[in-house]
Length: 380
Ligand SMILES: Cc1cc2nc3c(=O)[nH]c(=O)nc-3n(C[C@H](O)[C@H](O)[C@H](O)COP(=O)(O)OP(=O)(O)OC[C@H]3O[C@@H](n4cnc5c(N)ncnc54)[C@H](O)[C@@H]3O)c2cc1C
Figure 1 (cartoon, rainbow, N blue to C red):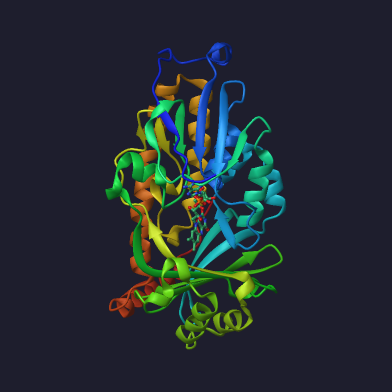
Figure 2 (tube, rainbow, N blue to C red):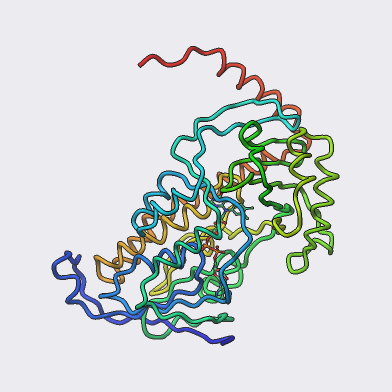
């Protein structure tokens, strides 16, 4: 199915907060979710099937098989618990004890405790979220080309950074923005991460090494320029890997080892896109969740975490309150935090990928790291 349009329009719904005892006497509502990624699946899994008839549209025809690790912070793990899959996710995901920030040569500048953070494989996360979606949810394998905000029911845009729902309802000025950076990532065999994990910041580039189930997760970002061979629709992974090998040839040995081992089957390359700032995630009975609302640069490792929290917040509001009240409450609860994270990630990207200011940045971080090491541990 291709190019179908969904429509969502308002219809009256009572004005008082529903308590669990009377919530299910309310009429059943239609909810259409566009996008079955992290946010769309979590929302479909958490919505109360006694109150909502849910249809989930996803363009992909099969589950992803290649993917790298996503850091899941404690609040995102609470969302996973709400969806009922935290146990299974944790069992399949190595935990992080400490995060370190290093120079390009591998010198550790700062060590940050990362207790409670786990690294989940994206394909595994999607598979587990899929398994949590109840059979009552109607599934459509289709791509929406446009939507109109008039029609029965509630429409949720969970369709990622290039969201058709956002562009159709919020306007073309909210088209995704292209950053000049490339993200390359993959998984290599072995536990190189055990001694070399952390993020390595160079001049205009960064490289990350961390745990993955059954191997070592790695990622790299650098200025890609706007060369045609690196355009989003036609990225040649082999060529990008070659570029990365040249780019990181003078960096720490662990980085070079990763890149020598990396192969095209287990490597992904993409340009980094973001969502422009929005002042609201709800218009009438249309709402945005996840990257559709606030795709940010990956530098804080927060996008999928916030997508999960959006989904559970929205579902819990919808499950317990009148629809219009619930949508507005969702927007209020999620807007400021996610927009702040969007700005924070962008600032972190500028710092991590600093060019001219790199020597001053390195000096400041080395000094800060030295001070931290010298200060006595806090007494309990
Ligand atoms: C290099 C990199 C590293 C990252 N690392 C982390 C990390 O460590 N931790 C973290 O929390 N986040 C991380 N993120 C961010 C994270 O990947 C995203 O924030 C997350 O995937 C957003 O989920 P989503 O469901 O909103 O969107 P998506 O995952 O993009 O899902 C959208 C879904 O909608 C479908 N779709 C799109 N358009 C249509 C349409 N028109 N019709 C039908 N279906 C459609 C797509 O096929 C897709 O399945 C990283 C991102 C990048 C690029």
